[in-house]
Image 1 (cartoon, rainbow, N blue to C red):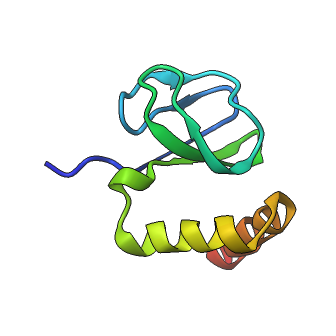
Image 2 (image 1 turned 90 degrees about the vertical axis):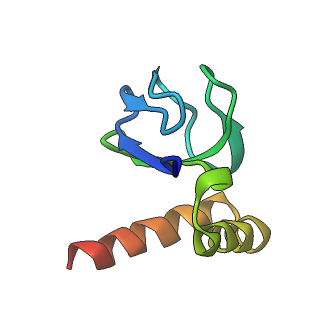
Image 3 (image 1 turned 180 degrees about the horizontal axis):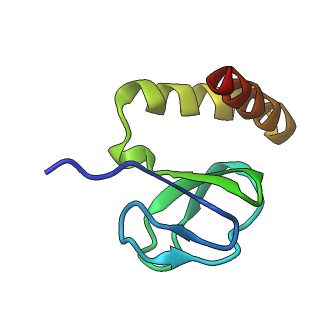
Amino acid sequence: MEKKWFSKGTYKNINCANCGKTQNEIATMDHHSGICHNCNISCIWYYITNENVTQIIPEFAPDSIKSFIDWCQSELDELEMTELVIELENIGKN
């Protein structure tokens, strides 16, 4: 059975893709790994606005996503990562 590798929600209400439990008021965006405070799985929180938060669990993510995350972590700082995610989101809207 394939595990869910991402979850979307808000700053005040996002469910962990691994354990399904609600995360409350997660930390602001840091493109380095953090953890789910319920199940302790390593994950990354992409926080763009209070209404747009994505959790990615690299362990379960497709290889292309893992490679992209590795590149971002080695080549970009948090501000550059935020700008990249915002621009990718803008592309998706148009």
